[in-house]
Figure (cartoon, rainbow, N blue to C red):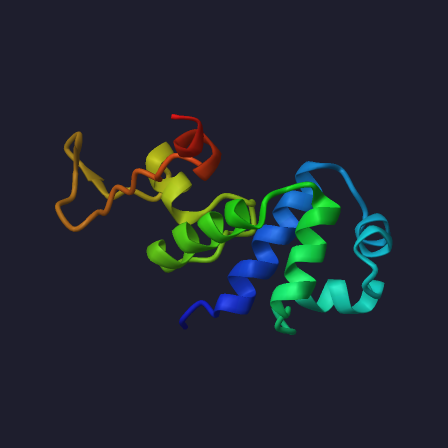
Length: 124
């Protein structure tokens, strides 16, 4: 099943919020969006307008460009984060999903090296 853009955006927003140890209520109040609607966006059930996405990013104090880079990387790999919170490319890099035979990685295994964050490129 193909990953939808709204699902990747919602997942990126949720991971950012959780990494900051913030509640849905805190972010929804700061972004001036209803708690239920923010929850629907995070679960990939609702599309966020560009204005609403910008407000949520402001509330999370994360640049919209950073969220879009994260979404782009997720979409490029074509996999949503797993239950354990790691993306498929992170699990492959860790070796848990790689097909290893006699100490060699199978030829059909993809190794993805993520691009540096946009803020790193802007500082250069």
